[in-house]
Image: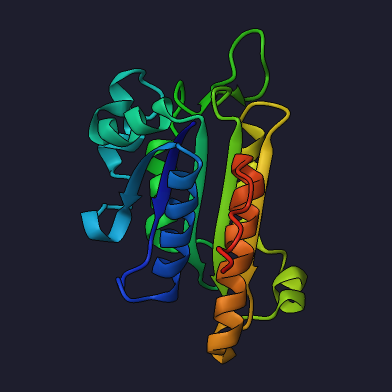
Length: 207
């Protein structure tokens, strides 16, 4: 398993960082090769510039500004996003990563004379995981439409191999969370990662 974890949160002591650490620990337990992209730590520029937009469909030159990220995306067979949900959607830095890295001839194929719409380009990705936190409740997030979840699970998921193995977990009502609720969520993330990677759950040692 070759896992790429795309992580974003501006504060290293955040609960989202604890979710990231749980995800990475479970990948390690599963024997996966893991690469971590920490968008804030790297100071990733989310802005699609005028020159990048002009050359958006010029392949492979369109990859040059974000070549390292494109290489990581092409390398992995497992793609995982760990991030906080803000205004029901993706943080700007993560949306910008999608804009700049999921390019034509990388994530999808553009329409052509034989095809009226785009076609998937991430057929090497077999697993897609999304782990997030939400200030709003589940019902309010669902009422609004959960645009962040839909962008990743449906939009990116459409571009991946079928059948696609998926995992999703969100801690809702983060603003009124408790140590107990956060611990329960980390345990839920661990369980979902074990099913996601096919790793048997470790039993606690007994005396």
